[in-house]
Length: 69
Image 1 (cartoon, rainbow, N blue to C red):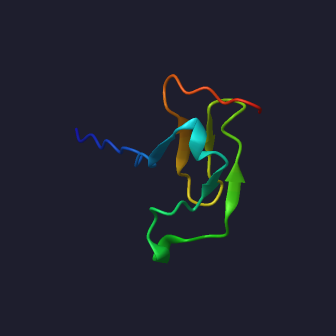
Image 2: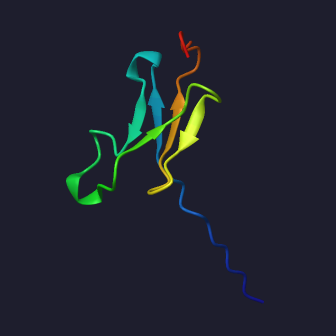
């Protein structure tokens, strides 16, 4: 009997401080060849968001408080 195990590649996670908002993707750390149209992400509401183009997840660092949102 042979068993094949496939694992889904984990998408990258970018942790943000409240001062980094508004969050957008692609972020400045991404290589130019990997760019897609810029999209702004609402991480203030739930604490995290995922880019619809590349799947990168953005989330607030633990303990961060977003004021005025």
